[in-house]
Image (cartoon, rainbow, N blue to C red; front, side, top):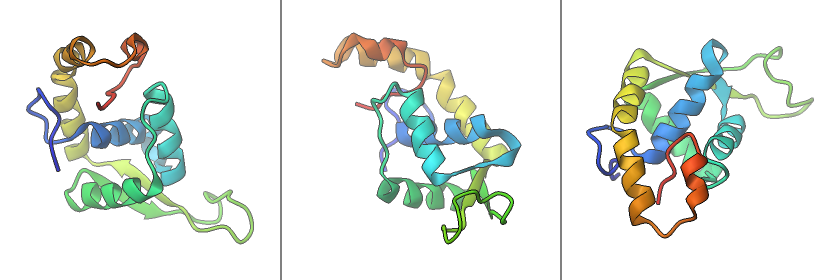
Length: 132
């Protein structure tokens, strides 16, 4: 998997977006569908992850020690009767360090993306990585 251009980060842009969404959730964790929604909002709707991309990525990040997960119980799962049990994700210390490393190189990388891309200037207003 290619790493983020222009940084020394171990994360690619989508992984960083996902982990930032998980970090925003705090100690309670966040489940997959909500991660997808948060990433979309954080990137001004320029990044839309599918479940088919997200869940293998979450598995890899967990296996690499960046994340931990837990299955929700009936109090956590408000999906409704008969709904699937939710798996909640939280950052490990290694994940927090990886995000910080990613964000160190982010401003320079972001400036290059704006200058080099043919994408609309409105991505300048987005707070988080917008992959090209």
